[in-house]
Image 1 (tube, rainbow, N blue to C red):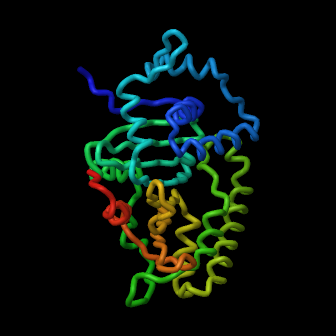
Image 2: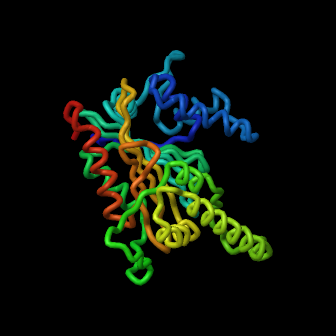
Image 3: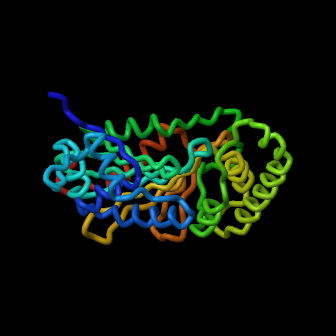
Length: 298
């Protein structure tokens, strides 16, 4: 007997499944669906949603009664009843935005990847937290900074502090997916170069205005943000409470990979350069520390 540990559907189908299962994250997905509708993207009809889910063997309909396939029901039940949830929002200049949720419980660990640009959801179960983060690390695919590209910060400590508002402003700067070398891209190359120069100047001003940041770090950070390949935000929250973990922001670039860890006060983050392996370890440790007070999670 085959064991159904993964299935895929589109955003509208995911929202339908979340709502009939009463999964809390339906609220966030519904907000994104409304935003897409506001941009003029047509939403499929109820009939189209049901037809697609039946064709993909996600649901059955008999005598006008909808039932989920057993393994799909198992995965979605784990999403609903999980004790804690990890959330990683990632923007990649090649692949666009994705949001990855990890639903953690003593019975089953389920990952949900939502890719708005592709209207795609993928649900996968994992035997352990270590396995889930191993796959996550492979998916991040961040190139470790070569030694010659690591800036000489000239400091005994390889970390500094940065204000939360500074970080917010940097992460809110518009980052467009990479071009593909077509004729239109070549025509607009000079315009893009001008935009990049303007963005770099703006980054430097933002960093120089930060009262927490050692000014010796301005140039290295500015170079890394200017050569950005991906940026992310990670946190863990506990169901049924207002408690949440520290927040981790990170960037991956050809000029260095950086992590920004929320401090004891929410207005200051600790900043340091790191490898992909160290980033995955940081996300894993934050998760295990956050769920240590909960019932056993694999």
